[in-house]
Image (cartoon, rainbow, N blue to C red; front, side, top):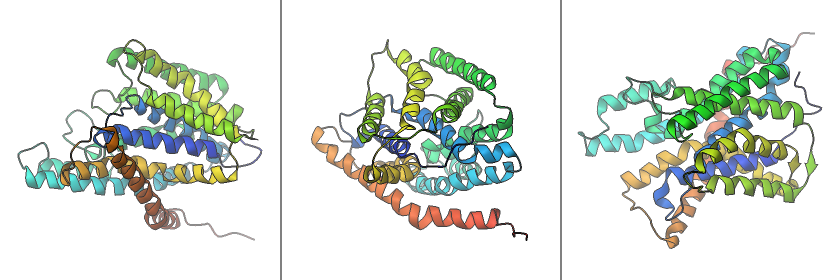
Length: 357
């Protein structure tokens, strides 16, 4: 159903993921970026879901359609996501433990910290009645459970995902996105105890829109470095935009429902040359690590090391340095922690079956 003429890498998509992760970093650690504000950068989450649908359909759609791959698929996704997730929680423990020690009467208490660790280990999201979970240690991790849900649903129903079914999913989830915008006045929702349904609407629309884009438009490749750079620049400009209050709801709805799928369609087609492609590949490779590590590392700087908030344009050098450090650390972790751990987990959980003559 979703076979491609050949498996290939998508460098421009890697570039989009890398830029999106950096802009989310600037959103979550604003004290390091002076007067620069990127209020719409939370929409990068929807782009990540969109790219995830495209990539999962490309890498696993054919095998899932043939059947017999569901369990291995679930293992593969958990192995891909969990090691860095766990490391992000560990880094988030540092400022949390510090807060318990220096201010036992503050928000962080020892019982709350224990609850956050235990629930975080099992990726339990924030629900009413829960004092703290993994998101309290590392805010961005809230997006992972909705993604895993979308992955699992896709794997279960992939053989029945005809075009009418996909359209129905997009209509229902798109309606949920519009409802969330009208109800909350923003689409920066899904991580609070009472708006989990909005997270499912966001991931449901974007993930399956990514599947649609791959199925119908993901098999053509045109080398056009200028187009590739323009697409990456368009994403950066869109996420950094500051629309007026009246225009914001239309901008957010339009970006998710129309703008990002169109961007993905073009990014899946136009590729840079090999040199730029390697650069995009690297920032795409480390984007997940950057996404998970930047907030707890920023909290260490601001709360443990007591770095004062920066306000002037000249202070942006500190923000640039922070971006470089986080990206460098994420790259180092990929080679020395994430990739080796995933390799061992695959050998343990997914041993190769002996070949028969």
